Length: 341
View: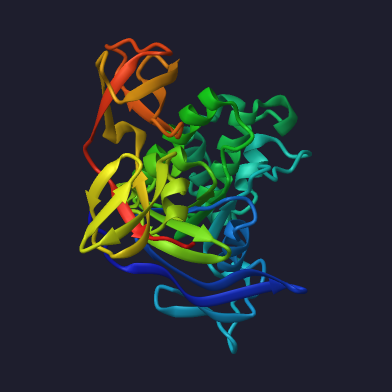
């Protein structure tokens, strides 16, 4: 999917609280109509990045632009109300004393209300039947939908979503996530979603930026992030790979699971995703099945080599593996990157 026109551009942004550096050399590009995910563990700086883009806080240094206009720098700071940015908070932040209709219309001008914008948003978000209810009368999913409707209503150029589905159960989160993506696509709204959920980032976003210790260490399509991580941190952020240590000489790296081609020489981390390991039952096999966890649509098999090292493979459920089975393996793909240690 190709996007044109850069909406948000952040360069070399830093932010500290007292002696703790939260963002360091933070860079981000957000293109018109795209959904960008900022993925990272708790404490990596995700929410701080969102608050700086929204204008709720000021960076210590660095540049943030919106449509090539500076909104934050050492000399310029545009307040949040003048940035045309909508925010959906993790805890919804709805006004408990206002019903759904008044919550959504809170940011609308009198002209927008008179022109039927409120009714349009209520219909768009399937909230017509709830417009006279108060937040405490709604489910978590309904409250989140109201929060999204309130953010969309004024027609912002960018919607910022801070861990929007964290407080919902898995089924509700998936349903609401699909609704949100549909609404964002339908309204052609640009969005930034911060999340620690790899499935959410990979399934929803056009671009995923992986954040570690306040710095974006890789920004690419979900497919590129998953298939070609630049480091062990990125690999672990978007899956549960087997990470092996190895040492490469002349483009060949030896590991506990075999020898592979490498683009680097020296000490390496070798990432092998479980779905890239095919197991074959063989009474004379070199590996021993330790455990099999069945999920219905697939299964994860733990197996060990002669040294007792344990690895994981993921396969379709058509072959039954049991503890004690001997197997051989075939590895279809590996990723290598220079080792940190």
